[in-house]
Amino acid sequence: MREIVTDYLSREIVVNTGESILNALEIEDRYQIGCWDALVIHAAEISGATVVYSEDLSDGQSYGAVRVVNPLVGGAIETVAPDEN
Image (cartoon, rainbow, N blue to C red; front, side):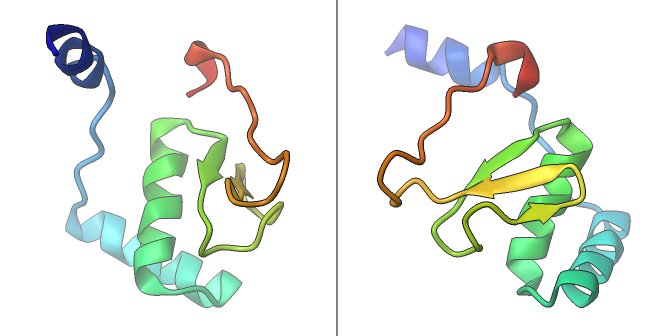
């Protein structure tokens, strides 16, 4: 259990601010996606992530530098090096 918690604590946590919400609203309008999905994309973007795993967004769709992979599509799982997040 200690190893799991230690791993969790080593990850960057993105805190949403008013500015985050405004940016997410721009993403929502630009890509015609839901507000919560846009907030996830924005959080991924500011944290430097290049891949978001989601069954709700279109598999293979790019939102700026962030690309969506649907983990429920056969063979869709990608390995991302730890330094790529």
